[in-house]
Length: 376
Image 1 (cartoon, rainbow, N blue to C red):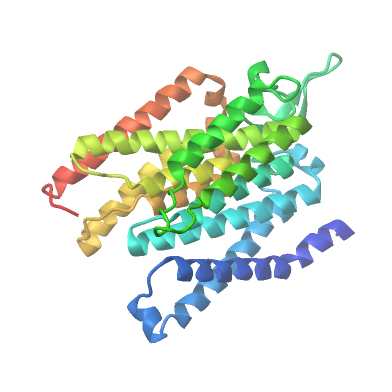
Image 2 (spheres, rainbow, N blue to C red; image 1 turned 60 degrees about the horizontal axis):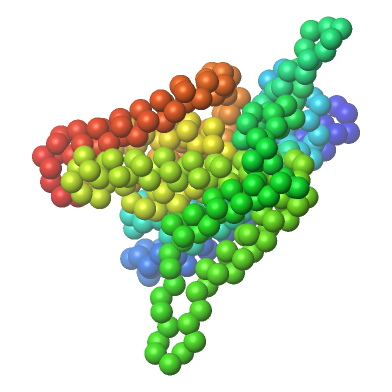
C-alpha cells in the first residue's frame, strides 16, 4: 500500500473516536432539549447512552471506509482525482449531519416535536459548511468536452444548476458586481428566518426587550454578503445551500397544508418543515426531492408496522425524513445514477414534486380513514 492509503486505513480508529464524540454530543443535546423521562430521572439510561455512543463510533468507521477508503460516492476512475482532504471534509460534514438527524429523530419519537435547538444550528452549519468547503457538496461526474477526442470524465460536485465546474448561475443570481444575486439569497434567508425560527417571548414589563433571533439574522446576512463579494465557487455553493433550504421547507410546507386539509386537522408538524430546511441546506435541492420521496415511503412502512405491532396511531414524520436523508447521503452514487438524468428536465421534476405532495396528502387521508378517524 502507498503511504496515503496506509494513512487512511490506519485512521479508522480515529474516525470511530470522532463518531463516539458526536454520539456523546447528541446525548448531551437531547438531554438539554427534552424533559427528563422516568429512565433519566431514575438514572437507568446509562446503558442506552453507551449503546448510542458505540453505534455512532461504528457508523463513523463504516462511513469512513465507504467515503474515504473505498471512495464509494463517485463511480469510475474520476474518483481517483479527488483529493483526500476533500473526502475527509465531506465525511466530517456527513457525520455532523448524521448527529443532527439522530437528535431530531430521537426527540420526535420521544416527544412528538422537533425543536429549533436542532434545526436552527442545522441550517446555519449546513450553509457555513457549503460556503467554506464547496468541494464537499454531493459528488457527481462531469463530462469535459475535447475537440480532439471523446469527452473527458472528471470528478465534480452538484451545485444548484448542475456540476459546479460546468454550470454557471443565471446573471440575476450571480455574484458581484451585480447585486441581484445577493438580494435573492438574502430574501431566501430572511424568509427562512421569519418562518422557521420561533419568535422570542416578550420580556417582563419594565425590562429591555431583545429578540435573540436578531444576531442570527445579522450574522447570516453578513456571511451571505461576504460570500457574494468573494464570488467564485464559494458563492455558488452557498446559493446551492440556500436554494436547497428553500425547496426543502417549501415542499414540506405544501405537504403540510395539503395533508392537513385532507384530514381536517394538523397532519404534519411545523418541526418537519424546519427539519427539511436544515437537510436542504446540507444536501441541496436535488437531494431534498429524493429525500421527500424516500421519506414518504419510509413513513408508510414505519406507520404500518407501528400500527400492526403496537396499535399506535401516531406517525411522526421527522424520523422518516431523517432516514431518507441518511439514505440519500450514503447511497448517493446509485441514486444519482438512477434519477440524475431526470433533473435535466425541470418539467418532470416539478411534476414529481407535485405528485409527492398530493400522494402524501392522499396517503395520510387514507391512513386516517383506515383507523376510523380516531384522534391520535
